[in-house]
Length: 140
Image (cartoon, rainbow, N blue to C red; front, side, top):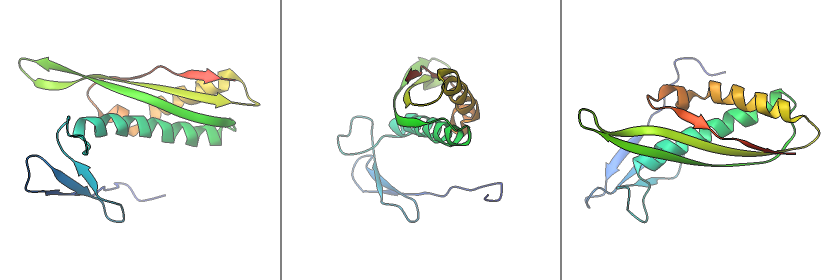
């Protein structure tokens, strides 16, 4: 395992046009970023919600493997809700992740336990100040 503390490095380059820019992560393709309504850019708000969603998925699949849970399909959707507070400004009120697992050869109770452990372990979810809730669906 990698030494702790781990570090994650990115760079941002403005594109000299409005709020358009690119995020660079060494060894990865550029990620075009911009405002929430930009049609060809990812906005930070979407990326935050996606980070929580992907984090949960990674933990589900990792814990499922260690628990011998046979997952034949996994997909999810997620939504983040913003609110405005007169003192704090805009902030996320909550994030809801809706994972759907298809399992075979194992019990639904094991899948529920894996989801619960994954949700509790998700680094992104427990690093945020807003609640991150899951609404799972398990298909047998």
